[in-house]
Amino acid sequence: MRVLCDRDDILQAIRLAQNAITSTTLPVLSHILLLAEKDRVNVTATNLETTICSSFEAKIEEEGSICLPGAKLYSILRELPPGQVFIETQDSKGIIKMHQIFFSLLGFAGEEFPQVPPPIETVISVPQLTLQEAIEKTIWAAGQDEVRQNLNCVLFEGVLEGEEGKESPFLRAVATDGRRLSLLLIPDFPVSSPFKVLVPLRSVRQLAKILEKEGDVKIGIEENRVLFQTTKFSFFSQLIDAKFPDYQGVIPKECELSFVVNRENLMAAIRRVSLLSEEQTRLVKFNLKEGVLNINTTSARMGSASERLSVSRIEGRREEIEIGFNAVFLMEALRVIQEEAVQVDLIDHESPCVLYPEGSKNYIYVLMPVKLREET
Image 1 (tube, rainbow, N blue to C red):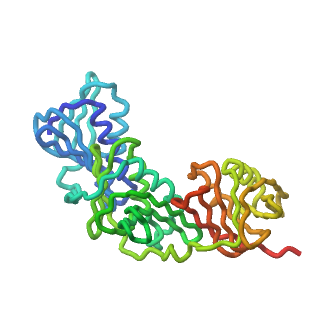
Image 2 (spheres, rainbow, N blue to C red; image 1 turned 90 degrees about the vertical axis):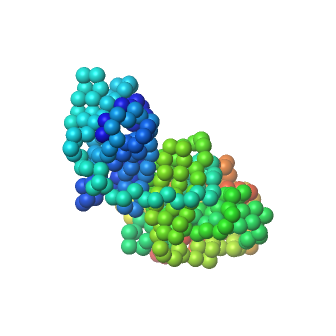
Image 3 (cartoon, helix red, strand yellow; image 1 turned 120 degrees about the vertical axis):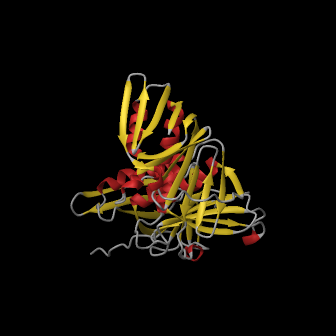
């Protein structure tokens, strides 16, 4: 292989692909495949669960392929000055030349790289920003337990027009770890046939890193894998073959008490009060009474803290309530909500709480409370 290319072009392609590299006992999986054909060099990285393919234009003096260590190759290219880079292979070595700069990088023959996934027909095209929003607002609630694969993922569900009483097709993204649940509904999503796929958490994280603010992403789905494709990359991921929990069944349909509060004020109060919460539970208590929300915590080792907030639009059959929450879980939800005010729906001190932007349920967050110990 003998290739002449622009340093910025190859750097961008390597930057995208290397997101699929993870620590592994198989050395070749820490490498990136460079395949020079016609007037382009195809770049591929994989961890066998996720595969990212990119490419860049180049002057191909001799076709060929080689696997080079991804992290080291990216570091070298990043340190090179702008300009033309010459790359050639000598057996299992990649030679990188630029002006008075010379690198000889040990690698593997291209034939040792795992087989690149065959293409998938793409059937849906949506803005990258839309997909990025769906990921950012749900991913943090996903499970982290590798054993429970049906929680260690994000559910993407396409629903047709007319189903569930909706006037247009929509996409629903859901993640849960069993204690909390984050759900985002994106209306007017171009669904031609219904689908429901579980994308592994690691894959979703990698995809979020390379999506951009502009441009569209095309999506294709097969029985056990999914493709996200833009003009700059193709992102393949294996799907999880498991049953996602009945998330609809855990979302309360009614509440006994609800109120609206300024999001920034609520975040600031929780952040301050939680400074003295117990590290194990991060417990903060909500005590709502006579139009005032008291947020407080008590620690046997450190002391206590409290802060009072005015709330509005108090509705329901109850007049007051005391309930405990994990402060970290509350803050994670509040950070991804962009609206000024949030509504909090409560039933009692043992039932799930529902939190969402005032006036819209396209995004909701469900959180199980922390049990409060009886004080003597």
